[in-house]
Image 1 (tube, rainbow, N blue to C red):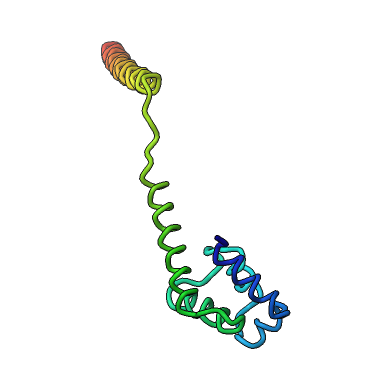
Image 2 (image 1 turned 180 degrees about the horizontal axis):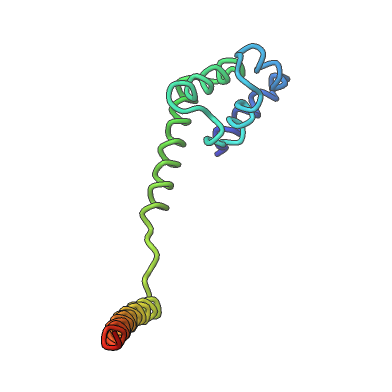
Length: 137
């Protein structure tokens, strides 16, 4: 069975209508009509506008507009479901990833300890220098 876009294109070609003529009659851009023929939902406006584009195109090429709109809605639902599934897929965290993260945490802890030791050493050096200076005067 042909998909919606192919059926629309075949019906248009059977009537010998160029896209430009349909665009003029329906006041829909050629780009949007081409998107309908390619089933490229990303190029169509959302909501009622996309449905009205499909309905107007179907009327021009002699197809049943309600059936075309229902099929378009099915394509939209399918695309939304596929997009939701792609978002739901979470990457697997492997043992190597966990090991890497643990090494990173260990390195951060060591860096903090070294930083505290350096700061304490600097404080001790300053105190020692101040006491030496005060002892001379």
